[in-house]
Length: 216
Image (cartoon, rainbow, N blue to C red):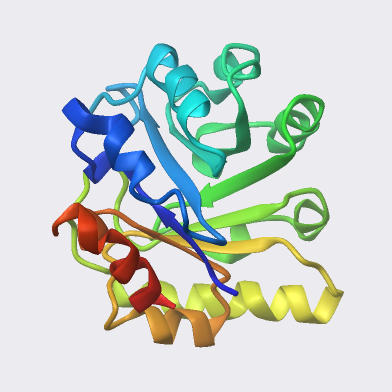
C-alpha cells in the first residue's frame, strides 16, 4: 500500500500533540518533518526539543527532510530522538556518498532529495544502491501550500524504471502540492510514498484520516 506522510509543517503548531494523535489508528503512515535553517530556504521550523516530544506521543515513523545548507552538522544532533528516516538535499553536499555512509551508521533509513530543476541523471548509478528513499520535490522547497509542478512526473517515471531495471526497492517519495486529484497519477507513475500537508490539514481534524485514505 502507498505510504502517506502528512507534513507537519501544515499542522497546528499550538496543538501539535492532538494533531499527531488524530492519526493514531492509521496504517502505512509516516510523519514528514521539514527541518529548515533559514539559509538554504528562507524559513525556520522544528527544533530538536519539538522532535523529541513527537517521538514520545506517536508510534508512527518520523521522516526528517533536512532543507539545510549543512546536513552533516545534524547527523549526531538528531540521532537520539527517534528519527527513522534522514533525507538531505543532493544539491547541498559535495561528497554525497560519504554522507550516506555516515548516516547509515545511525539511522534505519537514509534518503536523498532532488529539487524540481535537478534531473534524475545528476545521481550516479551506484548511489541508488545505497539509499532507502528518493524524495522528488514537486514544488520548490521552503514553504507549504504551493502548486504542483507537472514536469516532475517524468522524473518519477525515470526513477521507477531504474528500480525495475536494477531490481531495487528504495521508496520514491513525492512532496509538494499533492491532493486527491494528482495522487492517482503519481502512484501509477511509480510513487510509493506521498507527502501531503495543506490537503490533509486544511480540514477538520475528524476528517484527516479520510483525506489520507483519499490519496490512496
